[in-house]
Amino acid sequence: MGSQFRDLDAVHADDLDNLLLKVGLIKQFKGGTLKCKFCHDVVTADNIYSVIKDSGQYKVVCEKAGCVSQLMQFVATRKPKVD
Image (cartoon, rainbow, N blue to C red):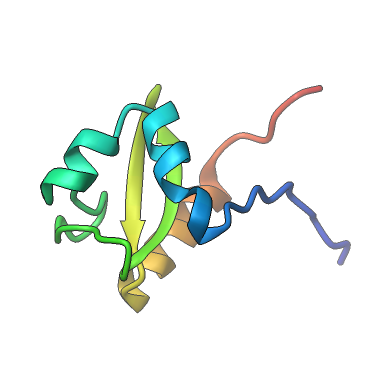
């Protein structure tokens, strides 16, 4: 079986606020109302795992094992980009 590779964008913790500002989530994040796409717990700087785009909107995922697992399934089922 062949391997499949996907691009991975990473953000340093120091740049997290800038990313959340760019994608329109900073107000919710700073206000403590930004919730994980999967478990709906509040996401903070201490538990954020990922920022993803879902149906045209940016969402966040917390670091809980179950949420990370669901994220991997979500990513695996998305159609690959066509260059």
